[in-house]
Length: 162
Ligand code: FES
Image (cartoon, rainbow, N blue to C red):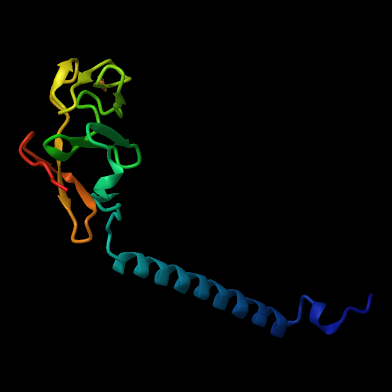
């Protein structure tokens, strides 16, 4: 019979007991960790963190008179007209595609189904059912133009003057 070291003998009741003790403690540790993880998830507020709808679009000098600038990241237009500054949503009111400004024909167009809007957002050609909404715009205390993408305002009433 080979001479096994003391720890490798399978019929040793002390080693077997220690093995099952460690296995049991390990299982309890895993179960405790799972419980703590679920408790933490339960206690953490179930909130969807989204970026603020308020966008700083910079100083008024950035926008030439009679210009229409598309801010692709925010999905808005900043328009500097004779009456002042205003902002339109650039999201088409048909099925939500991002529109583009076509300076050569002075029209905002939708690449998806061909809707056309004038510079004030009014529908010139369908299938868009509604005009592009005007968005709340104001001048911050620091002299920067701010737009709230979540707040619509009445068209042609809220110009910001620099
Ligand atoms: S999504 Fe703009 S015309 Fe259809």
